[in-house]
Image (tube, rainbow, N blue to C red):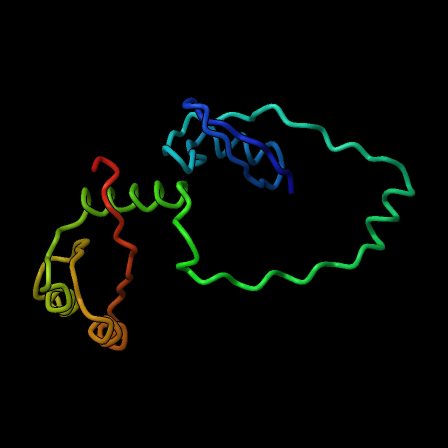
Length: 154
């Protein structure tokens, strides 16, 4: 695995891990690497500090260090949502609104009609209770809950 510091054409900086440099280049060429802040697909490698080996003694010291236990999971509401996550969720909301039909509180009923072939199969979104969503899953109807954040444009 190789770690790259990246930046987009809006000068947002972020990092990514890739199998090798060829895999990174292939993903960039296919426009599958995008900025988590603004969604730009014009991404390039940023200047990075090289990793410099300091000899056998340093390598031995690193091996002898005891691994640190993972930090305990933080509750979801531990603080404000990171800006990158908010931008990603706003982009996801925009895609859902652009490509799916809003069916409001009739979501469960419309999902069942589509499942039975009584209405056209298409992407839909709307509201339903936790219990109703679970009932849909038990009936073999795929549903997903998304965090519905405010639109990026206000």
